[in-house]
Image (cartoon, rainbow, N blue to C red; front, side, top):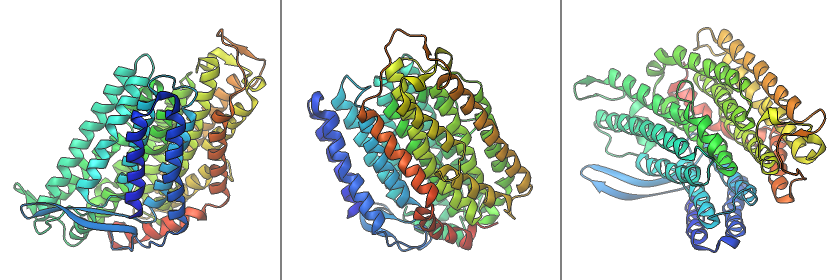
Length: 509
C-alpha cells in the first residue's frame, strides 16, 4: 500500500494546507511534501520490480481490488510500478518539494490555496504514473488539469486568463479524443470485459480487435492508434499542437512552470510509450513510423528556431521544451533498446534541467522584474550564484558531457541511428542532431547578453543576491543532473529492464 500512502499523504496535505493560515502555508506544504519525497526515495532503493507493467512484469508495490461493476465490465483499483514509472514518481515528488520552496518568494497572496493546489497536483501525478486500470488512470490524468488551470489563471501574469483557458481547452479536447478512442478499442476487442491495461495489451497483441460499428479490426486499431497519438501529442506537446505551451509558461507563476515543464509534459510522452508503443503490434505501428519520425524532427528544429527568435528568457526555455520533446518522440519511434530507453531517461533528465532553468529565470525575475534579454546585461556581477546555476543549466540543455542531458540525447541518437525499422534513420538522426547546434546558439546568445559584459538593467529595482531558499532548490536539481550524468545506470538499467519486453513481444519493427 505504499503507492496509496504517497497519494494519500499528498491529498490530505493538500486539504490541510488549503485551510491553513496563509503565513504558515508555504512551510507547512514543504514539510508535508517531504513525506512522499522520502517515501519515494525509499521505494526507489527497495524497488524489486522486473519487466514491463503491461506485459506481465513483476510490479513493485502493487495492489489490486475490484472497484466498480457495470454490466459485464469492471473497473479495478490497480496500481504498481515498473522500471519506467518508478523514476518518474521520484521525479514528481522531488520536483514538487522543490517547487514549493521556490514559491516562497514570488507567491505573496492566497498562499494556502496555492500550496494546496500544488500538493493536489502532486497526488494526481503520482496516480498517473502508477495507475494500470484505464479509468483510474484517466481520473488522475484529468484531475491534474484543473489545479494547473487555476494556478495559471489566478497567480499568473497579465494574460493569465487567456493562457489558462487555452491550456485547458487544448488539453481537455485532446483527452476526450484519446478517451473515445480507447473506449472504442475496448468494445472492439469483444472478449475483454475489464479496463485493466495489462489485459487490454494482452488482447491487442493476441490478435487485436474484431471490429466495431462496422469498422474492421485492423482499420479500427489503426484509427485508435492515430487518435491516441493525437491526444497525447497535444500534452507533450509537439508541432503543430505546441502553441498552448509558450503562453502557459510565460503567464504561469514560476513554480507552476517548474511542474508544467518538469512533470506534466512527461505525462504525454509516458502515455505514448505505455499506449501507442506498448499496446499496438508492429504491423499497426509500421505505417506511421516515417510520419512520426518526421514530426519529431520538425519539432526539434522548429522549436529550436522559435526559441532562437525570442527575447523573453522564459519563452526561450518554453520553446526549448518543444525541441527537447522532439528528441524523446524520435527515441520512442526508433523502437530500439537505446532509443526507447534513452527517451525514457531523457524524460527524467529534461524534468530536472527544465525545472532548474525555470527556477533560475524566476530568481532573476524576482530581483529585476524583467525577463527580457534586451533589458539587462552583466547580471553575473550582482547575482553570481543564481546566474552561475543558470549557466550550468544551460550547458545541461546543450548536452554537456557528465550532465544527464548528454547521456539522454546520446542514447536517443545512438538508438535512432541504428533503427532497422525506421527508413532513413540516419537522415532523421542527423537532422535532429543539427538541433543541438541551434540550441547552443540561442542559449549562448541569451547568456552572452544577460550574464556577461558591464552591468546594466533597464528597471528601477535594486538587484541584490537571491535568498538561500531560492538558491537551495536549484543546487539540489543541479546535483541530481550531475549525478545522473556521471552515473546514468542508477536509473537506466531499471528503465531498459522495462523497455526490453516491449521490443520482444510486439513493438520491435
